[in-house]
Length: 258
Image (tube, rainbow, N blue to C red; front, top):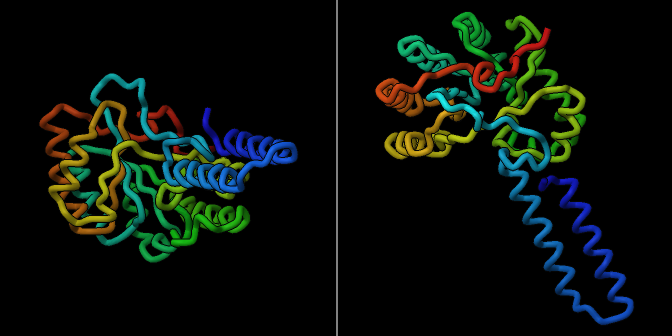
């Protein structure tokens, strides 16, 4: 299995081997540079791709699901657009999981309360969602996760179990922090890209193209374009006999601990 630990051991061993060989035969320094660059490239790819399980085990779908069941997840709320998302989910009798940012919970606690009262799940998406989150040390990441948990658990029936790292990036520091907090990492395998573009046709077609039983869809409840695409997507699911189920049901995992 390709993990950060295994890759690091392999490349350290390879560099040591080259160093020892260099004592007996001349090895051009460029080979050391190439090996280090390849190592950095693998680290960058593994860290940025949540489904790689490079640093932490992430639940990105249920590959054993054969029925037309998928789960919807929303990142970065709560926001004023969350209310529109809730109305659509109610209209189409669908349940979802909302991965919330701590500072946004402080601004919209009443919206979070409504999310939970309508039967949806909530998870931790850090407190700040900082652009520099990936560079935080384990102590600071742990503090962010725990602070957001405290905000969420004012409204939930138990301790928060689910965490989704900002931008879907994982690092050794995040791994160490999650070892302390005990959260399970929830990823996705159907990325809408609604966080990067407002082109509704592009977003919808991307989701439809990648839809399959057991999939987890990533959307955001932070923009009007996402709300408009969501209704079109829910119509597509209904017309094609897909059932939207909770993350708990799809993955057989509990969102909250006693």
